[in-house]
Length: 314
Ligand SMILES: *Cc1c(COP(=O)(O)O)cnc(C)c1O
Image 1 (cartoon, rainbow, N blue to C red):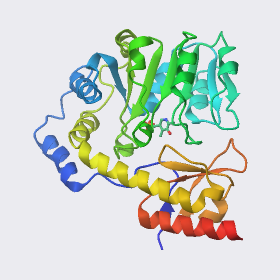
Image 2: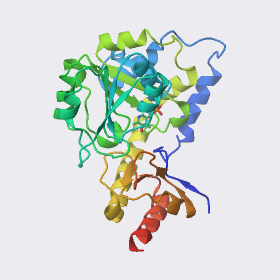
Image 3: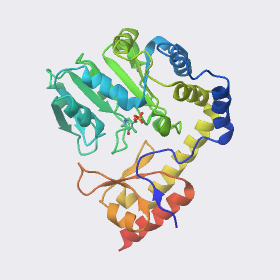
């Protein structure tokens, strides 16, 4: 039996051939010897329209990882993160030689707003909702409390589509907020590397000034546009994954936390056990006694469920 990979929160569905052909058609009729149009305005407008804002509110990049690096590289000072969370925040902070102030999540995985609000000298605050790896969302009123500190704040919203919890309207009231999203998860495009930020026009403009005018290649940016045109396919996959998430959770409740993303946080480190049985899950270096299971296709999830049920019984 082939190994099963439920470790990177990827979408288990590849992009259907009928949609990939649209990219091939584009390649055929496009001059690849030419640079993209400066700033890729078509892509930004397409994303803006899709979200009900404008292209001026959008900044795109080579994965939201690159945008994180751009934002973090620019802050020159302490960065507040809420742990456990996505490792790339401290990775980039370390690269640029900044300190992170790690504020542990509360026992129910909510953010500790009082503790964050005491860090008045922070230069950047990073919130992650739904949070990777805990899977819960941050309450809107908590986000607002943090934004009221008037410190630049990233809300990493990479799993938005699996949660439905919307924060975009906050950019109208807060010019210190940038929301990060990605085509890597819900849109099945992890291999093509397209992420984007949503912010008030002034903040978006300031950040764009620090980017290369050719920050994305033509093919990745075109594929992002094509996927927006094919959002009904994305939605079908989303419904499937969300249904599967709930089904898997029902079976392994004893060992998992509920989730609003495409993965479940497990209450034990069962990486070695699962791997021995051909299933790769995520080991969590900063969390003892936990691991993370990505939701896959039904037949993959069935195998994972069976293994975890056996584990619970033994
Ligand atoms: C997967 C993930 C990203 C995605 O990054 P890309 O660089 O766009 O692929 C960002 N933030 C979190 C929390 C993630 O889990």
